[in-house]
Image (tube, rainbow, N blue to C red; front, side, top):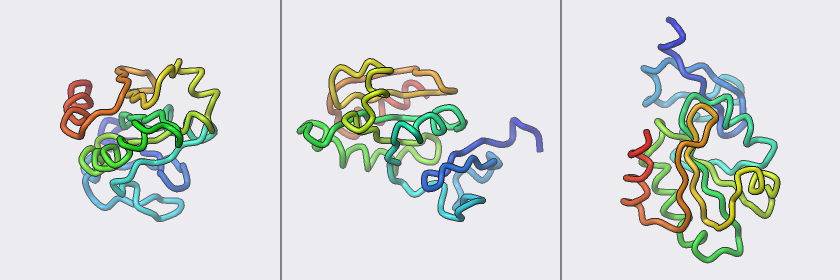
Length: 146
């Protein structure tokens, strides 16, 4: 099996980097370290410490919801983002970053308003949208950049 046939997938539970054959992407793949599911249809909450691993070691696109607990539109969008995870995994990893807890990340990416969605591929930001979206608009926006 050559490198084109495998993907690096970071475990949402223990952050171990797993090599996964592309053919197994849609199956019930499990982490080689913690043995939990690599995909469970849930966004993963990332701290500043975990963010870099998920950004740079994952071969999957990473969709990040920059949000805060006190933000009304963020709370309205949370269930939409949750449903989007169920729709987009295993082809996209969805993550949430609390900007109050990860202020350095918010500053690094120039997050000026929340919620802000940022889509990353190969460690680079490829698209950004500010403000809450409904599910159909969110899915259409992400798929436009995949």
